[in-house]
Length: 435
Image 1 (cartoon, helix red, strand yellow):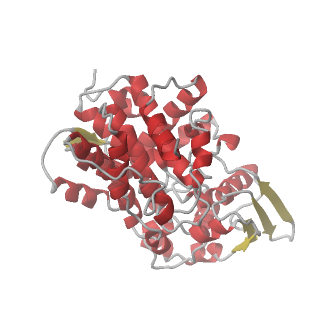
Image 2 (cartoon, rainbow, N blue to C red):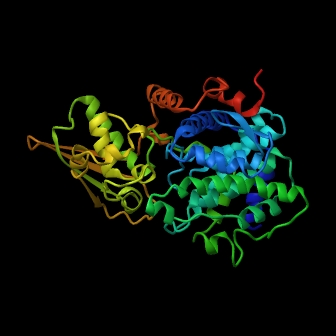
Image 3 (cartoon, rainbow, N blue to C red):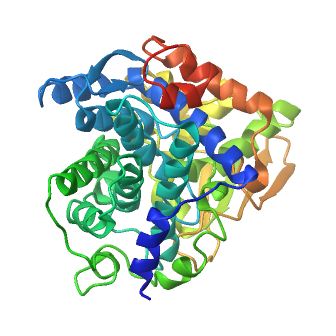
């Protein structure tokens, strides 16, 4: 049986999530919704909403942290943008896929337009969609060319939405989702707001793929392994290794949460500096040099130079700036991504103290391990090895750190029309009307 057939069968099958997997799905759902609330006031969020409002009228689905509704495809687009636009959304690190961003947005829109959903069915659809999107990324053995969170995310999301909508023709759903996959790494290279727009487009395309199949249309059936399939055009790799483990390892339990609203590749360095600051070992005045020894993907994703005319989207992916802000503020607050901050000579001077060195890691998709060496003004060195980044399942955020993230997200949210968004995320997700 082909790997594609096994993936489709997995997407269709009945599943009972093991307790630990269910707990991970519930935790990540709350984290993702909170991140989407925070993104409702981010740069670009209101123009995205204005554009989506022009695509048609309807009240199918809610918008996170906004007291309004849109047709399902438009709501999925807006919510996915809000979830990803601050770079605060969960990520499967080995896969390099922000699977929760697309899957949560599209599944929520599908649930809303049908008037609600059994909570266990919703969590299972979420876990299945995240599993498939992450599995596509895990199977890749080439560096990112296309923006994998959007391409893999679209496919996983569409199959998850098909579960919610009870659509059985999953070969066609997969084929039509694949036919709409889009998004490249050029937006990442330039630090462009097109990056979260690619996530938004993937969530909208997932809704569209399922709707097209419900309307009787068909798609290509060898979308992953065919001569012009996903693993020929988008990524190189072998999908069989992932297919062999389907249902034995739930990939949603491997997903990392993000403590800071910045690119995940920045978090090992930032979390280590945060710890040193809290221990009183360093401060902004005592650090003269910071050497970060990192895999190639870290340099590629966040090793970009400091620039006084950078955009907020670029800033979230600029490790020198982020290091300067951590040393200055003791946290990363997206409201600091302003022209005044970028023009501050003190910030620029701190940013210049970071030196990034490649560590020889041969894995093009590796985010860890990393090593940090801090040189203090008195000449002493502080060295830390970072086997796993804070937020990874092997280095989980503490309850206090999780609550601090939720509190900042609530502070950033445009509004809170439904308190369940933070107090009871599963009820919020599955019961569109407040009880």
